[in-house]
Image 1: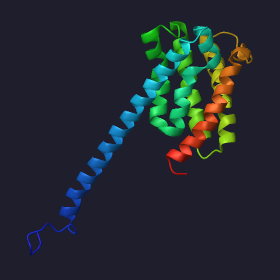
Image 2: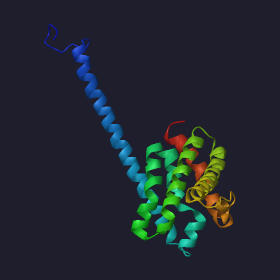
Image 3: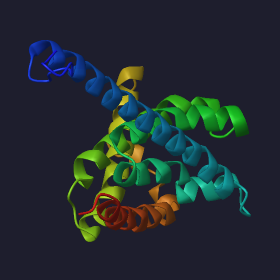
Image 4: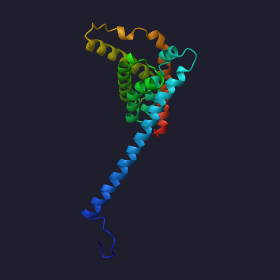
Length: 196
């Protein structure tokens, strides 16, 4: 204590106490923010596919528009890496538990695709122009689908046909266009949200 009875913050004792309080408050507020944003991302990852499946055509519309990929993509730019990866990891199982979609046999592969897609989007999305992000999002989807398909075949001990995972992509063309549009919008929105 100084001559006036006030704590001197120049001493090691005073700095140690203040440092712990400051670090605890900052860490706690960051944790609360990350958890809150993760809840938002997971909620969007459940709500968007559910709403898309309500459109005429139901499951077929979902398979062609790829709505389960939308929220993690937007979360990459707007919410950050942890909420995006939490959403990618939780979305298939939560959607299945609430709606029965996707079917059980698709859960492991779709979860892996979403995590790879989100990781690639995180790597590709930082600092990209809207046009670059618009190209990166469908590319991340294609790479994720191909790599998870080939890895799944290899792990199952079946013959690996490198083109098999890309079969049926014509049906997903509207989803690739949607991912391109959302990727570009997310890049613009992410820059605005982060003051860039």
